[in-house]
Structures are given as structure tokens and as C-alpha cells.
View 1 (tube, helix red, strand yellow):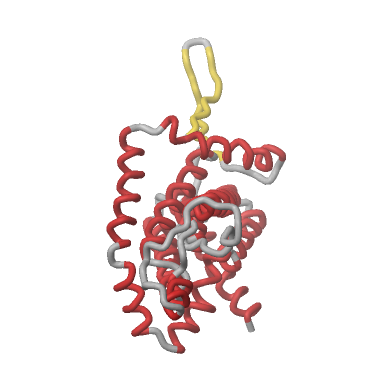
View 2: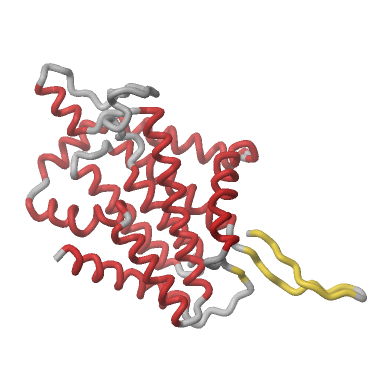
Length: 280
């Protein structure tokens, strides 16, 4: 039954995005599966980690706003936790488990990107191919980045705090161990939400590729947002974990897509003719 759900979700999602690209003629060049694409994982990872050095005022404002938003939401983490625990039931748990969580884990999202890529190959749709490759790279790079962040913070998950409370500890959303390399290395990894980061990276990448289709962005971000909410519902993350994960995923997806899209246009001048390539 799980395999059936996977193919239904992934097939429908990929078909929707494929049709968004049909009959579009543009001058953009997209990545392909070749040696350059494989090596771009290394160059893009380097560029991603060094990007703060080149940030402008706008970038720092966005970064600071994400931190501030997460900090502000953290003051309501316990209230949000209690709200979901009061209102969850068998139906919402089933929806979260089978309809939403797999998008963040990669089961549905990467399956959809695989089908989108195959559809692009069959219908010779370079945009669909490139969008799927950029989204896949965004998923993987965001997962690497969020893993590092988790190990630096080591925040306790809601269900872990609840278990500790039964043993006499106070209930608080601010239990964080900080960087360490001992018993809790893989145990306390609540901040930021990895599922949310990954699916927002995919959504951001897809939304950028199809930025001329607002409904695609709406659909992609709706799926990503609901996936993030499911992590709060399941007691796996605090609301502030999800907010930061969404911001981080959005940034990575947009960075990868902009970094791997080239605009090709003819360059004609006095006694010369050629092609101008502009990195978007």
C-alpha cells in the first residue's frame, strides 16, 4: 500500500509540473546529466558556504529577519506544541504519516523529480530536465547544510523534552546542548527541521524555474508548508525549528537554481557576431 501511495503522489506531482513547462520557448540553458553536472555539486557546495562573504545589505537583512522570526516564534513554541497535541487524532496522524512526511524525507519529492526528469527526456523538455536536476541538488545540499546546523545546536525535540519532564525535568523549548561529540551527537537534532529544509529547498527551486507560472509556486510552497506543519503535529519539531528550516531551504533552493541557469542571447555588433551567456 505504501508503494501505491508513493507512485500516485509522485506521478501526479511530476505530471503537474511537466505540463507547466509545455510549449515554452526561451533562451535559457539548463543543466544536464553529464560530467559538468556531477562536478557542479562540489563547486556549488563551495560557493554556497562562501556566499556570505559576498552578501550585500539585502542578503544580510533577509538572514537577520529569518533569525529574528525564528526567535520570535520560539516564544510560542510550547503553546503551539500544546495546540497540536490537543487537536491531533487518528485522521490527522494518518494524513501526516502518509500524505505529508514523505515529501520531507525525499520519498515523494525525489520520486516526483525523477518522474519529472523522465518526462522531460521523453518530451524533449529541457526546462523540466533542468528543473528536476536543480531541485535534486537543492535537496541534497540543503540536507548537508542542515545536518551541520543540527550538530552545532543540538536542540532537544518536543517528544524528548516531554520524556525528560516525566523524569522530573522542567518542560522547556530552550533545551540546547550546543556543539559536542559524545553521546548526543545524533540524539538531539531538532533545530532546524531537516524535513522542512529539504522540501522547501525543492519547492524554492521549482518555483524559481517556473517563476512565470504563479500557480506552480503556490502549489510547491503549499506542499512544503503543510509538510513543515506535519513535523510540529508529530512532536518531532518545535514551530521555530520549522520556521528556520523553511527559510534555510528557500535560500538554498533559490541559490542553486540561480547559480545553474544561464541566459543565452545573440550578441551582434559592428563587424562581429557571437553569443552572450549571462548567469542569472
